[in-house]
Length: 366
Image (tube, rainbow, N blue to C red):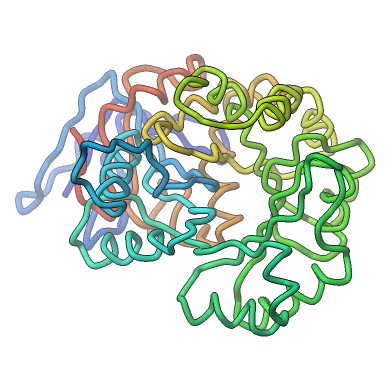
C-alpha cells in the first residue's frame, strides 16, 4: 500500500513533511518518499491535500471493560468491552494500557483482539490490581506469580488511601514487589494521589505513578531524578461531575473528586521539573472513544501542543517499552497511523475528530 496525504507530523521534531507517500508492507512502514512515487503493484490510498498524518495515539490508563449497566440489555460484560474497544480505536487510539479489571476481562478482550476476532486497539493489561487486603492474605511472591500466570503485561498496585492521605504500602514493600515483578519483566504502575503515597511508590522503584493528583515540588524533583513517569488523568474528575447522575458514589467520593479538580495546579510541579508525562484518561464507563478530551487539560498544566501530542505518542510508547515499534511514523515501525483535517499543532481539538485510522497496516476507519 502507498498512503498519501497533504502532510505528516514528525512528532519528535515538530516539523512537517509535506506531500508524503508512505510505503506500507506487511503491516510495517517500509519507507517515506515524495508524493509522486508510484508502483504499479501497489494499492494507492490518497487521503487528500488537507489531511495531516500522525502516529496512532496511545492512552496509557484506561478501563476498557467498564460500562454503564442496562438491566434490559442482553449484552455480556465482554460484549460491552468489545463495543468500548471499537469506539476507542475509531477515536484514533490504536494502543492502550488497561489498568485493572476485577474479572480479568481485559485479558479476555486483549486475546480476542490479538487473534483477530475483534477490532480494537493493541492492549497491554494489568488484570486484577493489588490491594492492601490481598497483601494481608498472601505473600509478595504469590501476588506477583498469580498475575504472571494470568498473562498480564504489567502489575498495578493501589497505594492511596484518600480519606486519610496515607500510603497503603511503605517503600520497603513496594521495593519487594518491584524486585519480584522485575524478575518476570513486568513493570509496576501505582495508583497514588497523595504526596506520601507518591513518595513511597517512587522510592520503591515503580515505573509510573497513576494520577499523582497532589504531587508536590520536591516529589516532582524526585520523580525526575528516578526517571519515574507520571500519568495524570486530568480530565477524570470533570468527567465524573459532568455525568454525576450516572454514577452512584457516596458523598465522600464526590468530595474527593471535587478536591481532585486541583490536579491541574499541582501537576504543573511535574512539568516544571521535566517529569515525563504520559497521556492517560482513566477512561471509565461512557468515556471510551472520548479519550481526546484529555488533550486540552495537558495545555493547562503547561505543555505546548507538540508536547501534548508527544505525551500520547513517543513518550507513551517509551513508558510501554514499545518505542521500537510504535509512537512515530518512521521506517521499520508498525503502520499505526491516524489522520485529521487541518493542523493539529495550531488546533489540538482536531484530535477529537479523527478522520482516518490504520492499525498494523490495516485501515480501520476512512
